[in-house]
Length: 92
Image 1 (tube, rainbow, N blue to C red):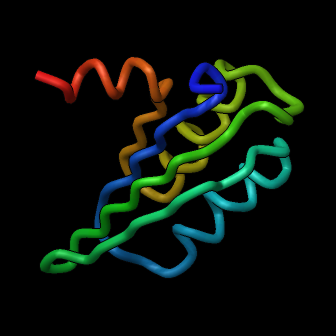
Image 2 (cartoon, rainbow, N blue to C red; image 1 turned 135 degrees about the vertical axis):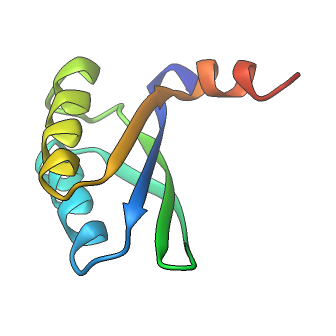
Image 3 (cartoon, rainbow, N blue to C red; image 1 turned 60 degrees about the horizontal axis):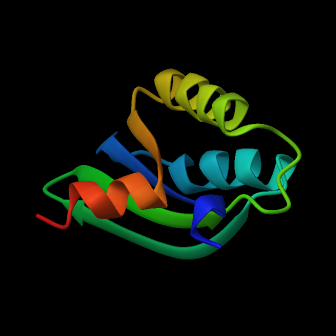
């Protein structure tokens, strides 16, 4: 169901461990990664993840806070959005 889907976007200077740190948080929270795309553009790392919250052991708000905290430590930007909202924002 789409209400259980989220889009996570991570962006910033490329460095070792970005994917591992984000994936570890998702695993600890029992969030399934359904699709992942990443690219490197002139030293700038960008990653998009489609995830499923249906088995999550934490709330959306708590997951978002944990990801924001970890990405702040990595000096990365992160956006965590519900897929329904993301789809509406990008359907214009």
